[in-house]
Image (spheres, one colour):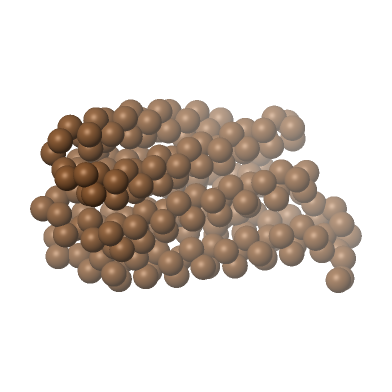
Length: 208
């Protein structure tokens, strides 16, 4: 494997930015599920395509880490950030796939709290995509991780209210089991966004 003695900083930041942009694409696709007459299978398939692209970006990042002698910041932090961005995409894909495979979009309507969770994820995704290019200068990032953590708290609240709704007797037992699995993936995605933000904070503190 050919090693580079130069930092190749631009390549790392570009990969982080591309990965975060895919998260925005992912949450936009989940938002489509709220539209009337939506082709749920198409949404699920497109989410899978975005997830595959994110996997490729992660592989490119790992390859870049292993072939670069001097990295712009700690290589373990680069690896962790790339891995966490990929984790978010995995959860987003799982939400879309489960909604399709379980036939949940055939219900008269999905719970309002489920849409609230998707809205939180959409905000977190956009914040993350805006923050990634700022890693290069390590400036103006504090508002990002503070807001991302606040949104995760909003997501926790929506998740708890969704559980209350699911176990209220409004749905049959099998539907509850299916929606609980989707709810868990939504909450895991919110948590994963927070983990990304916490890692960015750790990197920024180290580099300051």
